[in-house]
Every structure is written in structure tokens, then in C-alpha cells.
Length: 132
Image (cartoon, rainbow, N blue to C red):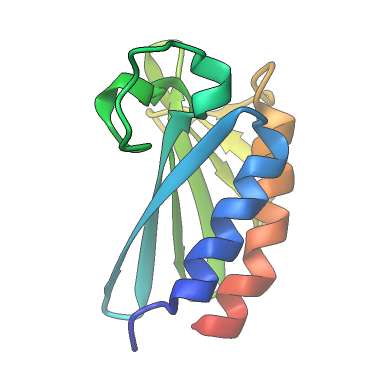
């Protein structure tokens, strides 16, 4: 499997931005044995922060918003979106349309970000199928 093209990383970042205004995402992808892991690292935009003494680098820790970091894992036509929510890791299994906690127990969709993550997963799935 070849590295993901820059256009792909830009596209998936733009999908996440649609559901998190005033944020940008640094996308870091890792490919191994036909599996892809994509880390979405959240950052506030300069406009949202509004400080006059802010750093010029938009991915400086000054802008970091770790509360909206999440990871997408894809392989064998299966997609899993995982992120921290109130101190624990929750995951959305796109293929079964179910949420699980870090113990593997099925749970209800978490509020308030669960629906956004489900929509993001649905938008990412066909893109990942295309590139993998």
C-alpha cells in the first residue's frame, strides 16, 4: 500500500472541520499491513483564540485542543473511530453502527459529539475504500 496522497489528507481534514467550526486538524496517517490509522489532532483557529501575542505557527501547542482529538482505523473494509470522552476511550464501529467503551461493552451514543463522529465516519468510509 502506498502512502496516502496529500489531497486525501486535506479532504479528510476538511470533513472534520465541517463539524467542528473554529478548529483545524493536523492529520497524521500510518499505514501498516493494509491497515490505516489516521490521527486527527485538534487545534483552535487563530480567529477563535483571539490573542494578540499568539504564535505564528498554527500547530503550536498554544492552539492545541486535545478534547477533540480522535483516531480513525481502517482495514478489511471495517472502520473504527475512537476518541477520549470524559476520561475514557469510546469507539464507534461504523460497520455495525454501534458504540463501545474501552472495555468492549456496547453503549449509547455519547452526547454531544457522538452524532458528529458518526457523520464523520460515514463521510470517511467511501474515501478510505477508494484509497485502500
